[in-house]
Length: 120
Figure 1: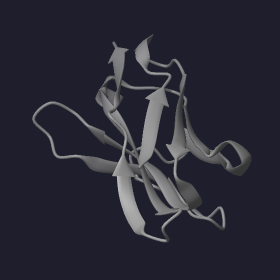
Figure 2: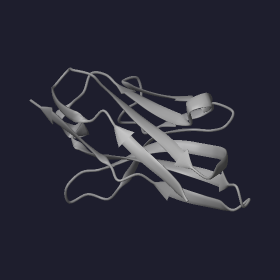
Figure 3: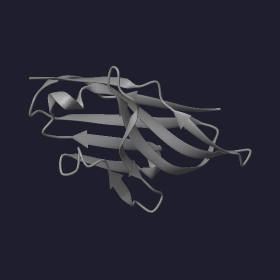
Figure 4: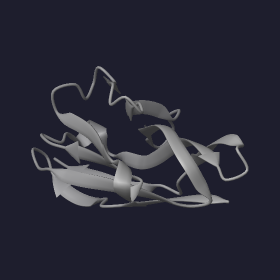
């Protein structure tokens, strides 16, 4: 089994910054793409940012220029640096990863989410 654990959420004022982390653990042979998604109350879960094994990044238009995704392969960890936060960024942020486990099975895993609240 593979587990994803997010951390770094919290309450911040508009214009502030937060850094989210997501560490993958368990029966990991290789991690493929990793990414961050978010879901605000009453809304669908949406993509925030993704990063491939080749370090190609992709961002939602709403966060371009403000958020940056990165990863540490040695730690099986993906990060999301969030700057210039806006109240509209308030949501539960979820980590997602496509992982090849030690049985050579490829599956998608999600973390439990971390709350980010931006006050105006």
